[in-house]
Image (cartoon, rainbow, N blue to C red; front, side, top):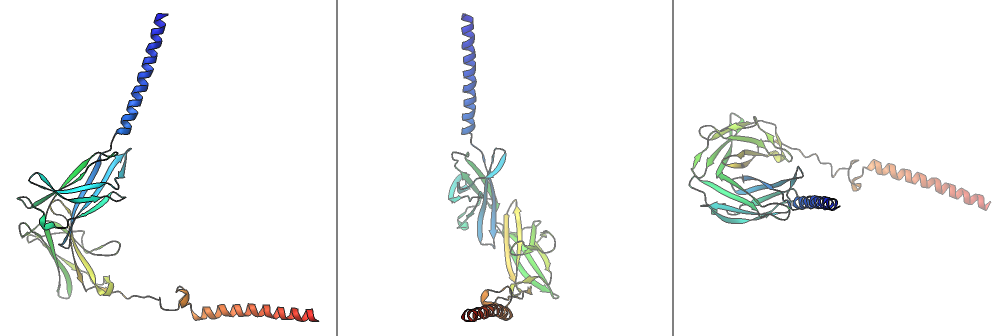
Length: 289
């Protein structure tokens, strides 16, 4: 009998331990935080605007999700110390654009490289995280030239810290469009020993008022990031605006209804009401007689 009671106590203890273990695992699973992944891209536009594109994501339940509406701290690393530049908040898509207001205030290292760090302090759902990005400052100078009635766009890239051109980097030449740019020639052109490229601009490309916005682009380079430079060239085929807004057409607003349609509509109305009036008069004559 005593052995039986001890056996019952052992079974109860094992069951209790299993419940405790499962409850602890469930609690740990609830308290587990996900790791945030931060992707950074340095962008410079028209040798003036500098900004950092930030994308925050995380793996939750084996799926990649955007980390939305979280605050990020942006700082520059100078001599192993962080100098705060500002804060930014990600959008619903986990994206943010941090504009560097005063680029001249940034301090490069001895090689002319800038080092920035973007940090996330963490919250109840995600662990804290940070990501560093390094880049050098460069300018793209673009110019339109015409030789033998053929238009060319020439461009060169200059490292501002060395004040010298950069060879063997891929530059893309394209025409800006509303939805997707139109590339000119090959996907990219490697700069020569003088850091220059020259690309012919084909004739007949349409543009508003004959103007084309030509863009020279260095995309996601390991040393210089993304650099874009644009010029407006009056060499396109002038787009004729064929607007019929002020004309009387079938698709115009009701104030511009075609005359023949108005005449036809009012004719039907007059005929129908004329028949009603004629029948009503005859009905009155019948009643009186």
